[in-house]
Length: 356
Image (cartoon, rainbow, N blue to C red; front, side):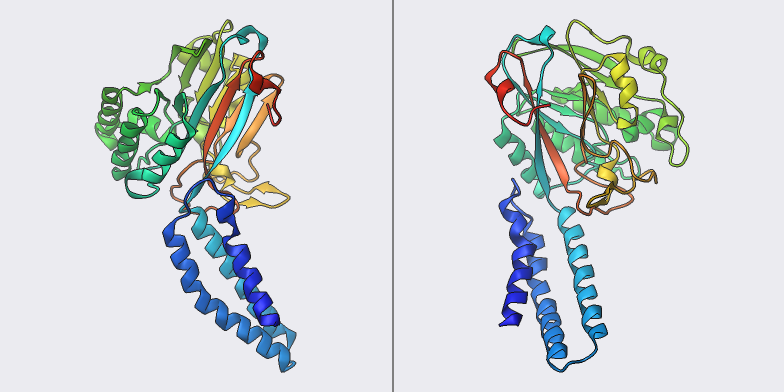
């Protein structure tokens, strides 16, 4: 009886996430889970056999520790093969109170990752969400892997069929652009292809957009490459931002696509009403009760690892990313697609709960 309870409880915990995930869970994960049954059958029999024979508890603890390690590795494997949808709702300031609610899909840090053949799972999820606009926060490719250029371009080709797409550069695209001697014309070809599809590429520039009656300016910013250092980073000055993209549009709702969230306070001071960032991959491992552990740049306990942050009435939404590179690990830190609803004060959605 104890064996049945142990076995049933474990497998209930293992697959219960299916009910709470907005997407179809990877078939490969369940195949791995099925294969894992043989391992679990062996472990549970060994545990209860030892317990009945009154063997040393050290042996039981050793087996349970092995079970814990197995579960952790299975969870990590699962998180590298599926993603979730995170939602947030932002009430707009009074100066932009007119108009209707706007739905925005925000993607960042794909790094050439594919969910299903040709990213069909990701595309299908975005279609179901019916966004009015799609904003891309950079690092759709990995500069060290040319094949990721094609995966990113193929996804963009499908996204423009859904909604208007506005895309800024991350550090990977920026370094491709700045180092043609090392990477050739990869950046030029990638951007030319994206623009030919109809993607609005915001390489240190801004565009005015009328979002269903809401006056919006979307700006894409490249920060100095020294701000992306692994162990020592340079500071970002307000003058650096103004040099790249000028001043903010105070009479409109200002959205800033700035890949690194580390400098959110400076973005807010510049005048960004909403900053959309990524870069830190959610801290790779998210420890319960502690939070994000480390960034791909080897910075411990990052402050802006993923989620929603505020400085006064300025908001920053940080994506945990959709892909990985170099450190291909995720633990308690699922990849995510973010859906943002912008709500004017006179819109009914502004009175609902869970707003920023």
